[in-house]
Length: 109
Image (tube, rainbow, N blue to C red; front, side):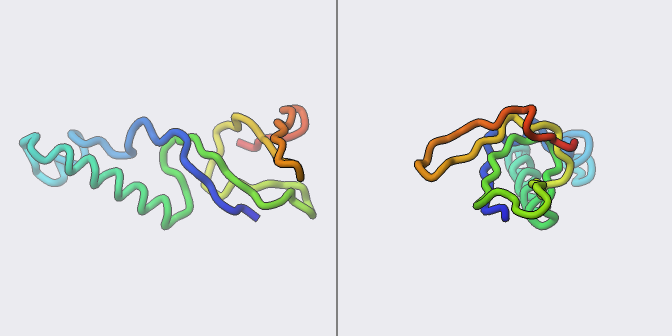
């Protein structure tokens, strides 16, 4: 039922620390390669998130569905633990956006 998503706000931090964890593990003492190592950390996180279909650190996403749920009424966000919902919107046949009241849905966090 989910047709796609986009990242609105990416992670503020990476799941591993450059200095304490990664550079110690790599035995790198200088700062010449810090930018490269940081980009490799982000790339590895993104790859692992895509592979596991989970998000490892807090991010804000726009998630798109092609239709309302038919049977049980549940919309499942497939990225692991949900921390909050900013809004739920739908577009009618005239392509008019309507925001659903928070009293109409329940976010299971």
